[in-house]
Image (tube, rainbow, N blue to C red; front, side, top):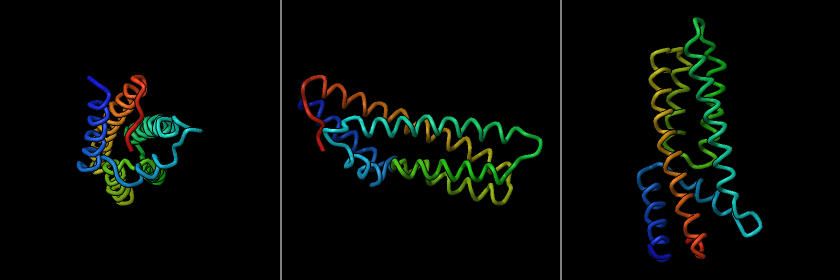
Length: 149
């Protein structure tokens, strides 16, 4: 595949992530902070999001397995996940966290379990999609091209 095709593929792929609601304008803002002095800024920030999210999702899973569930602590963890999702523009994950927090507040175990599964699912999707996008960007750079804005 030639460089122009790769660049077009990247633009189309990125556009689909916005149209399908996976990303919002916050991701665009994040990209605007990247420059020649910090060319890996977005990848680094998103990698931190992945690490943090996986830790929080594991903690939430463990919390829901307890005999006595600390809903206040869970709500704080979901709030943290919502904030980090929002900061990178992971729109679907962020929206689910809002619903999840409502279930925490209502101390609804079934609702929390259901939301946790949905958040894990959406997180898995956005992680895969962003990793694919970063790989495509790397292919373009390796071929001597530049990332289209």
